[in-house]
Length: 320
Image (cartoon, rainbow, N blue to C red; front, side, top):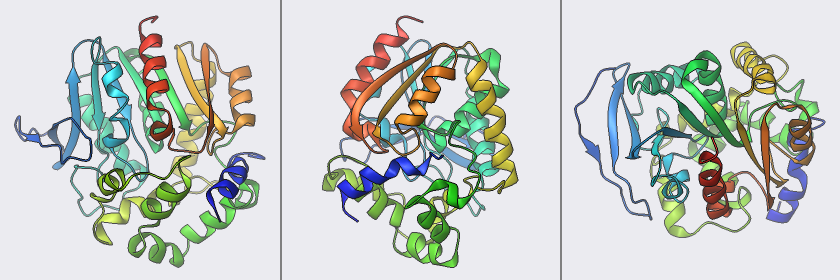
């Protein structure tokens, strides 16, 4: 399947859809990443995160198969006025890769533990992919600590939880059936399919450069290191399973539609998690929402529209 065919079909995906380790820093490894990373141990495992700027905190959360590197060209737009924090999820980026199942609960324990260890208050969240589920969930449980939420390609109604594989429509139903079968282990653990195929070939409007791809590959050099990228698609709630993620997304999804927090949605056409039909639903049903239509796009919109996202985010935060 070529890029144009993939982009034209992705709308079907959703519709009819602390223990401190000290003040040590992890050094940026090139690839256009200008930040050094701080580290804390949560549950005995190193969590790495960017922490730059000063002021009200803006927390940037990534998903599968990326890292804080995803936000490298957006963070500079806000650091003149805000403190920017961008964690690497456990098992991803420069965070530790312990022997875990990498379920949603494992990720939530580590990420939410990090946000609590940093004692963040008056937080603005900026969310993408599985980082959106983790962020919405944390916000719903910590309502007095969150002041606003921005999101793009996020896990929200009317798409999730999915009623069935068939409801996802092709090609997503075929992809997820494969990923949840033994064939998924070969494709992800040995073929690194999330980085080499989904991110590189289908997730952006234009192919990513060799340097950018090197940065995204770096955390996943071996089959064992790729276990988080395999478990994430197996955590997507389909026909009520896994029950935990189905409950989490149902709970925070209802809250996100009705709460009065200022919200900023970036969306693209056709998108993947928020295609035009879902964007229209959220415009009509989500309280206190501002929507920004970026134009054509797929899933990793930060790579195609960093300046537009960064400037709109900076302007929006100054109105809060």
